[in-house]
Structure formats: C-alpha cells, structure tokens
Length: 195
Image 1 (cartoon, rainbow, N blue to C red):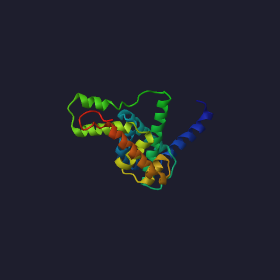
Image 2 (tube, helix red, strand yellow; image 1 turned 120 degrees about the vertical axis):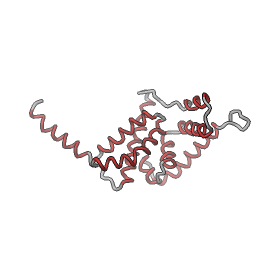
Image 3 (cartoon, rainbow, N blue to C red; image 1 turned 90 degrees about the horizontal axis):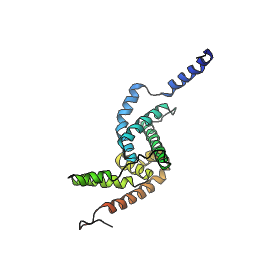
Image 4 (spheres, rainbow, N blue to C red; image 1 turned 90 degrees about the vertical axis):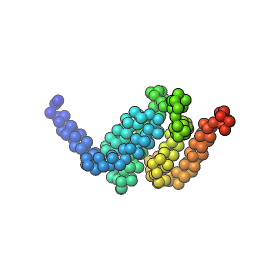
C-alpha cells in the first residue's frame, strides 16, 4: 500500500464507525424484541425459512448502516420492516427475471398432509398457507402485518410505502381475495372437490 492511500482509508473507517448509531446493548434489546416477529413476517412472505434467515440478517445489517434519526421505537421498527419488505420485493423481482428459481412449493404441505394422518388444524393451516402463497407479495404483507403482527394502519403504511388512508381499502381487498382462495381450497360437503 502506498502511503498516500492511508488518509482515504482512515476516512472510510471513521465513516463506517459513525453509521452504527446504536450501542451493543441497545441493539441487542431491540433485536430481542423484533427478531421473532420479523423472521415470521419474512418466512410468510418468502415461504422458505432459510431465505427468511438470510433476509433477517440483511435487514438488521442495513438498519445499522442507515443514518436515520428515529423518532421512536415504533418508527425504528417500522423502518426495519420496510427494509425487509424491500428485500423481499427485490427477491421476487429477481425470481421473475430468472436470476434464481428457488421458489416456495405451496403444494409441499398438502402432499405431506396426504402422506400422514395429520390433525384438522394442520390441514387448515396448510390451506391458509397455500392460499397466502397465491396472493401478491403486497397483499401477503398487508394481511401479515395487520393480523399476525398487529400493526396499526399508520405503521403498515410506513412499512409498505403507501398512504395511510389507502391501507383500509387495501386490507379489505386482500381479505376478500384470501377468502375467495380459501373457499376454493375447501372440499365440498359430500367429500368431493369444491368448484
């Protein structure tokens, strides 16, 4: 290394140190409060636990790298979910472009249910999982954030980058679409498939 390059490297090191605004204890506490809900969100959005693991790490890394001054804990949490949502969108975009083909198999759980003697609740969860996988990523995100995570409409709007006033209508449409998908997956009362 040439001596003249030492000064720019020092500037880069100082820049990196400034980007991490939370100390270790604050980050650890924030991580403990948010990692499980975020992982569940990512697993639901991608359909794959190993992808959720990777995106979870990337989400926290990007959060730590931001220079955003957070107004509150809920603002930081919403920002984290926004980062995760964008990572999932990027992944879906790459999948559509054929960058990789590792997509979730919505019928995997149905095949497993047919192979063994599983409880009715397992079948209902499978139906829900299958129906959710047929929704658009934004519809899945809306439903998961509202009903599984319990986020308020303002938080959902911030995470997904939509107007708060439109969240109610978007949730209504997503619920209606999910209900239609669930209706199609339920067998008819005589044991045959429903139409």
